[in-house]
Length: 374
Image (cartoon, rainbow, N blue to C red; front, top):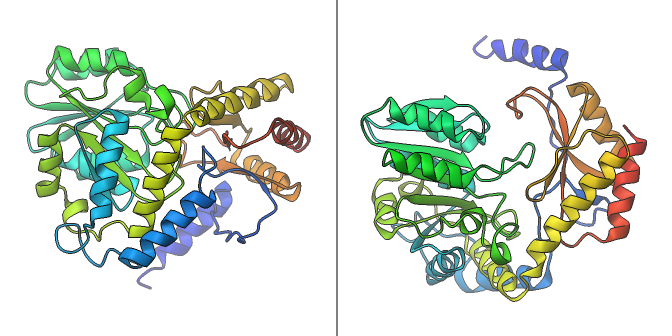
């Protein structure tokens, strides 16, 4: 049979406890949500949902084509200008997803003869970008500027270092200042994915690069997603205008993909403006993360100290992680469950989202459920 090998892989996944299934959620779920990436609690905010609806009524249900044909509206340009200004960069380019933005940034900035130095803990979208890039990729130790420095010292041509700013598995932050110093010693570019930093870190949620003093630097390119703190959908690349112009002309996931739907662009723009008005949401998300960590560790659980809004709790095995998450769900709490191959170190975890709109009572309830179901 043409696809007979699929059965063998399915059996192997079952034996390893790694089978994944879709679980559609109802619109009116009663679960306390610590599983999504809605860090600022904006996905259902009435101001955001109304902006999405208004954009759909004005511009239509879809973008109707690629950005270079009919898929760019005035709304897309408005979002790009405000996003770049908020984060401190010269220019921005919006994509249909954060995944597409990462593929674009890495592939377009790593031509033949270049070196891509990639952190071992990077997100799958950065890894796939490295695989598709025409340059040579070298994976280095996690969050280690000296390892980046060593890799760059052995290469004589163009180079770029690629890293998450906040790693999605454990929620730890990259040493951005050290990474920048290492890259600048060799004239290498810096591409960082701030998916989990935007809206949480930096002054009023302006992101990890802004907090590290790297925003607007000529050698720094940042990718973001609009689907986490901004409660919408899509992604963007921020950086110097010449880099953004290059992406318009060279990034395949921009040239050949349908543009971001107007509703998503409208929602993201409204969320960005709300964050400008309510910068305290960023600090609250970090406060909730710290509270979750301190209470979980007080219960004897092994939780990683969060640098942003991701709280990771170690599980003894993939099977136990799945059971633990299911038991939490039965008790009214939705938590993430990360297992191989989603985790680079092979250690399964519960992954908790610290949302800015969680109350202290909800935090205490979540900790009680997680502790009782371990």
